[in-house]
Amino acid sequence: MLLPKDLSVSYRDADGSPRLLYFDTQYNDTLALMHPDAARDAVRITLEGVDASRLEVRLLSPVDLAVSKLARFSSQDRDDIVELAKLGLLSAEALRHRANEALPDYVGNLAPVRTSIDLASRAIEDAAPRRRPG
Image (cartoon, rainbow, N blue to C red; front, side, top):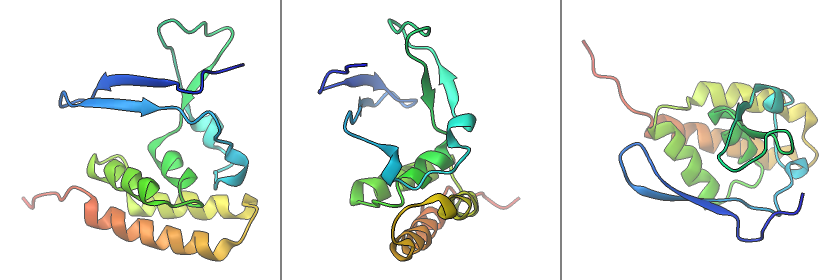
């Protein structure tokens, strides 16, 4: 399927803030760290104007989205992971578990990815919403 180079969607998030979702048409998950069950566990969604018989759209679970960002782990990837944690959609334990399960299928140097897992886990712990006692 040929996608436009500037594919994006603007929307308002839960608190009404304007957001822009940019689709990276050059992305290829073969170089990412990806859990083997990520596609199976992704949620199928329907989009207005998209013929589901021609294009199936799925959303990765928050933990699988975070895991997919660990191999590159740019500042934007880190910010995305922290945002998932702030929203309460991701725990350090879940990320560490899912990422470690994905490591055997990763093609590349594992040392930097393991470091990314540790750094992301610490960032999640720092960013996660705190529960009030009582």
